[in-house]
Figure (cartoon, rainbow, N blue to C red):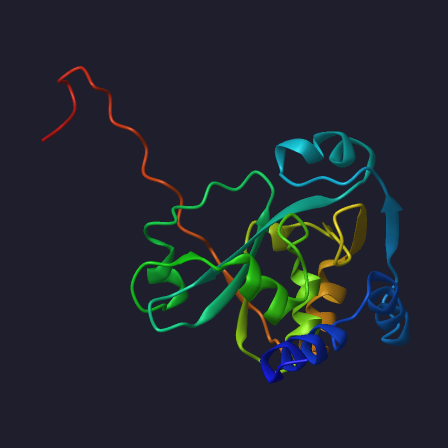
Length: 191
C-alpha cells in the first residue's frame, strides 16, 4: 500500500464508530437518548424525525476560511445564517466556503449528511474550531446524529458542552449573523 494510502487508512481507523461514541458518552456519565430512524441527509428530510424526538434539532455546517482554518458550526435547524458575513462573527480570514467531503472524512470521520457536533471527538489534532449557535443553546435538550445519519441522540445543553470540552474543543457560543431582510422592489425603499 502506498504511504499516502497507509496514512489515510490509519487516520480512518482512529475514528470512533457510532457505538464507540455512545460508549464514550456513558463513560463520561452523560445521559443520552438515541433513536434509530431512516437515514436523513438534509434538514428538510428530517422533519418526521423532529416530530417524534423532543428538544432542539440541529443543522451542522463544516466550513473553512482562506487560511485553511476549519470550523464546525452547529445551529438550531431553522436558524437562517448569513454565510456571506459569518466570517466576521467567527474571526475567520475572509469569507468561508464549505469543506470538502474528503476533509470532512479526514478531520471529523463522518460522511456528508452525517455532520454533527459530536464528530469533533474524531478531531484529535484540534484542527477544527467548534461553534455553537446561541439560539440552539437556549434549549434544555439538543439533538445531533451520533456520527451517522440513521440515528439521533439527545443530550442536555450542559452535557453537550461537557462532552465537547472532554474532546479538547471548548466551544464558542455565538449569535450567528442572519441574512439581511429583502427590501421591497417597488421603489419605496429608503435611500
